[in-house]
Length: 600
Image 1 (tube, helix red, strand yellow):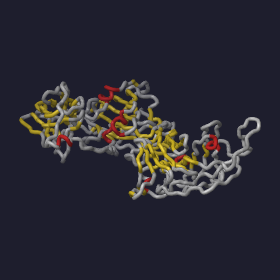
Image 2 (cartoon, one colour):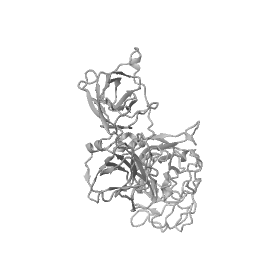
Image 3 (cartoon, one colour):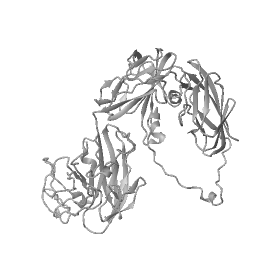
Image 4 (cartoon, one colour):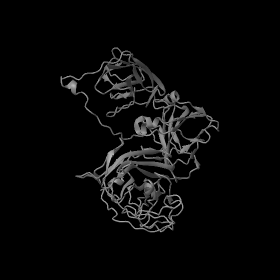
């Protein structure tokens, strides 16, 4: 059922045959002894009862070939014996590598260097005139190569049999977490004979569940096959296979009843796919493959049923490749708090150290970016002048562009991958950069923010506008790399010889060196310090004791990067920020900002 979801996968290729090309030939490794070939095709291919002309590049037999191991296999050949289709259907191949002699099609596939690839020879089945609806024939397929173990498989061809076309399903808008609804899975039999049952295959993403599976359904949890298909992070999906018995006449419209979906706390945008098939072994069926690798359980609830429905909105005509599919999208009234945290750990000299940044989805929703990655946030680290990177993680890279335009000088700006297109509740990523500081006493701070491909090309968004995030305060933070010392040092206690605790904390000016909204890397540095007193509200400051203790202060930043009074009673003015931990042994000053404006 993943055939309806196409995602862009970016990649690059490198030349590896220099030595071979230097002598005018490209060496092909010999296949390993005992290699086996692989051939995969649906057990049943259904076609319309009337002859159909093949469209340009059209195909209705999806046959995949491959080999085991890693070495390529030369001189692979596919043969298709169509003797069993006499009086039923005609099979043709129009890819240019195939020839037909009598009732046998032979395709010279040549160099086979994949474990599974769809052949490109445009196999097309068409019924012969007068073929009786529901009649079946058989094609025998064989894949061979010199010295390799061959693969053979038969597949059935049914002409004009029962086949379902499914109506589109309207999205579920503003769904409440915890609510339950019945998806409108509506379909009709567009074949020439009655169906004796409907096989309904279900695939659900996180955020949806069936509380009580019907007794004529089986279900299983997949720990993440979808992610392993190359799309990104693994996604745990739930699969169901329901067999609903009962005659469905040609052109009769029906609706699935009794399979209810519950919206869970993980839902923000999610969906369930439904495939409706007349036979469990139909070419598009996923059930046989799922059963081979997943352990299914049978439901115990009331059985699902089919009820007669109107034909409105159900396509007519024999199904195309996706005619048996529909999808229930769900948009839930829910959100997810994405947040950044950072720490600075200096070495003994104080002029070098490690900057550790963590990006996390704190939930409750899991966020699925179906746009191909454009809305998936990454982490931007803007270092100030006077700081340079000595060690950059593999998933981070320098970015010397502003609004997509390359600059003629480095910007000291670095982008790090944070999430794949599926961002589960609780997902996080950590990036540790080695950083060196120039000598001096000027305060230095790194600005860290979430960005996306969208926000990176638009002015006025210093942080990614993530519509699902109800609290953007922690989407852009500052981490102090070097702060000014406290204006005064308390006198030593006569009894202990250690500095006495001041009656009121003494704090310096917060460094104002931040990246501007365009990410150009320019900014001002504080020129001096101002002493004073303030009482920090509970939860706004954290202090530690002993060497190496860290303090964290949350302050509101205006869009330009300056401190601003948010109007709250616990707001800390510009003149006050804790550097007590720096005086005790040095660590991080973490500053969050309130995002002044957000894109709807």
